[in-house]
Length: 345
Length: 251
Image 1 (cartoon, chains in turn brown, green):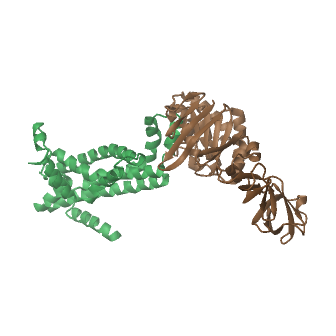
Image 2 (cartoon, chains in turn red, yellow):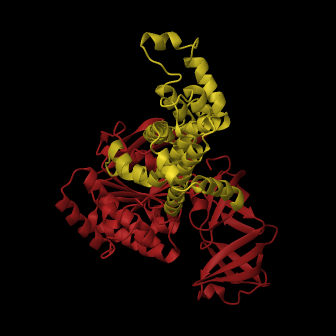
Image 3 (tube, helix red, strand yellow):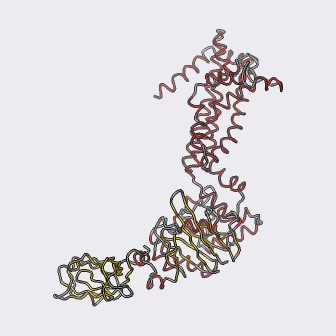
C-alpha cells in the first residue's frame, strides 16, 4: 500500500514538531526517516499511524484520505521503541492479540502465531512473559505482534534504539531480510545514519520538522541537498570563508567552491574521507596526533593560519606513509561542498 | 515505631478477651451490635463498588486527558483528606438537614438524608473518595500509554483495550486502593456520627456503637466490637501488603 502525506503540520504548544511536510512512499518500499532527536520524525510516523492528530494536512493510503480513520481502523502495524509488549500476557497471547480483537477464530490465531514464532526465530518461547526475554527477543515479539494481523503498512519507531550494538546489527539484517520476504510497505525512524543507509531503499532526512532531502542512500551521501544534510551525514570539517574565483581560502588551504559568486561568504563542508594528506616539509599544516579506530586511522592536523582539520584513512592506506605527530603535510581537498551563507541551514 | 503501632492493638485484644469467651458470644446476640456491624459492612461494600467504578473512571480522565480546570480538580480530590470528618458531617447537615438548601426538594420526594441511611452513604463516600482514584492514578501514570496505543494499532476497540490491557495492568493498584477504601469506611467515625446521629438499631455503625457503649458504661461490648474491627484491620493490612508487593513487582 502506498503512503502519501501532504502539507502536514503539528505543534506542541509553541514548539513546531512538523512543519509543512509532504512526502510519498511507493507501495512495497522500505524507507528510513533519518534525523537528530527532536527533529519531528517520530511525530510524522505517529500521525501516519493515527496515534497523533495533525493540526493540518492529510495522510493518504493508496490515494485515499485516511485522516478520519482511528488508529484501530488504519490497518497499520506499529513497532514501538520500548517494545510496548503487554506485560501480563505471554509471547503467544501478545502475538495473537490483534487477531483476537479482530474476531479471528482460535484455530486461525494458533496457526498464525506459530507461523510468526518460527519466522521470528522464537520457537519454544511462546509461553514466556516479556520480562523473561532479552531486548532483542522482545523487539522480535513486538514485530511479530505487529505483523500478525497482516498489516498493509509497517511503521517502526526507533526499533533498535533500546538494544545493544551487536544485537542491533543482527536485527538490522534481519529486518532487511524480513522485508524482502514480506514486502509490506515499511517506514522506520532512526537517528543512526549507518542504520538508515544499510537497511532502507530510500532515506528521508528530517530536521526541525522539515524534509531536508529524500533519496537513495547514494544520493544523500554524494549529493547532499542542503548544508544540514552535508553536515549531518558522515563526519565532516566545517569552515567559513570568502570565495574568490571558485576557491575559498581556509588559512593556507585552498578549498574548491564551485558555483558560488565572487566575494561571497560561504560555509564549506569537507568530509573526513574527501581529503588527501602527504608528508611535505613545505606543506601548509602540522599533524597533531593520529588515532586508531579499528580498521581506520583518524588524523588531526592544524592548518597554518586556520583551525583544526580531521581526516580519515583506511589503516593500511599508502597516504599514511610517514605521517606522524609533529610532521608537516600538504593537504589536497578532493571534494568539498559550499553553501552561500544566509541560506537555509 | 512498632511499639506505638502495635501497643494499642494488643491492648484492645487483651482487654476484650480478659473476661473469657462468653461475653464475646453474648455480644453477638446483641441486636444493636449486630446491626451496627452489618451497617458498617454494607457501607464498606457500597464504598468499594462506587469507588471502584468512579476511581478507575476518574483516574483515567484525570491522568490521560488535559483539560481546563484539571489542576483545580486534582487538588479538589484531596479535599476529603484535608478536612476533618466532623466538619464534613456538619457541612452536609447544613446542606441536607433541617433548614438546609435541599430540604424542600428532599421533602417533596419524601427522602430523608440526615439521620438516615442515605446520609451514612454520603458521609462514607465523601471520606473514602480519594483513595482508589489516587492509587489507580499513580499506576496509570507509571504505565504510560504505549501499551494502549499498541492495542489500538492492532485494531482493539476502546472497550477491548480497557478490558484486555488497561484493567489487568492496574489490577493491583486498584486492589490496593479498594482495601484502603474499605479500611477507611469501616473506621469512619466523625462524619457518620454527625450526619447519621448514631441512632441505635438505625444509623449506628460499628464505630459509633463503640462510642455509645462507652457512654452507657457497657465497656465489655465496646471492647468486643473494637476487637472485631481490629481483626478486620489486620486482615486488611495483610491484603494491603500483598497488593503493594504485587503492584511494585509489575511496575
